[in-house]
Structure formats: structure tokens, C-alpha cells
Image 1 (tube, rainbow, N blue to C red):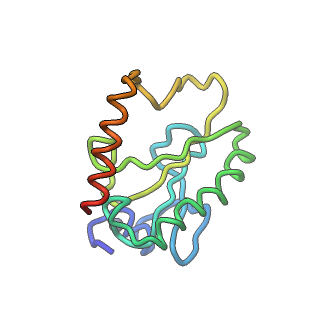
Image 2: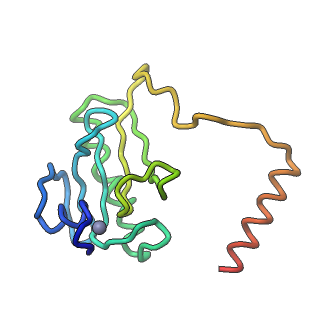
Length: 141
Ligand SMILES: [Zn+2]
């Protein structure tokens, strides 16, 4: 736990949150700046900045809690679908530096076209070369 971390302070009960679910590993609460009504955050009860810093048990509990809570969010909001995402690092849009998973309810024609703002069509050789670099990096770590 980090003393100045907003999420650690919510976990400790020092800051308010509208909690939807809580267990030994995670807490799920409504985002106070929602992208859509019902936008919720799944937060591990272990302070780590990024997904790769989080112990494996907490990583799997994040996704488990999302799968448990998301259907209830859809039922309560009347939404048809949802996105699950983790903004990992500031350039990816992470604002609170305590890893967290977003559940963003979606509906047809909600005005949010896609989370992919740019897509390209690289050649097969380019994809294979990049794949090789990533596999090499995984072996090195
Ligand atoms: Zn924290």
C-alpha cells in the first residue's frame, strides 16, 4: 500500500467510493469520471504500478472479478456489451499509477466508435520480424 495513492486510500476506507464488489484480493467500484454510466474499476488490494508488477494471484483475480461484476452492470444499465481494458503506463492513458482494470459498458450507437484510434495493415514479413523480437525479449527477461 502506498500512502499517497488514491486507490490504496479507497482500499483502506480513507476515501469514499461506490463499491460494487470486494473480496480479499480486489475491490470493484464505480469510476467517478465514467466514460459511460456503470463504468467500473477493478483494483487489486496490492499496490503495483503496472500489470507486470502485480503478483500472479492478483492478476488472475482482476479478470475473475471483472467477469463476475460485468453482467450485473449490463443488467443494471441496460447496456448490451462492455469493454475490459487496462491502461498500462502514462502513454497508454494510465492516470492513477496503481494498476486497475476498466469495465466500460457499451451499447450500439453509443457514439464511441472504437478503442482502436489507428489501425494499419503491416506486411506478413514485418509481423513475423516483430514477433521474433518480442519472443526474444520474453526469453531475455
Ligand atoms: Zn496504490
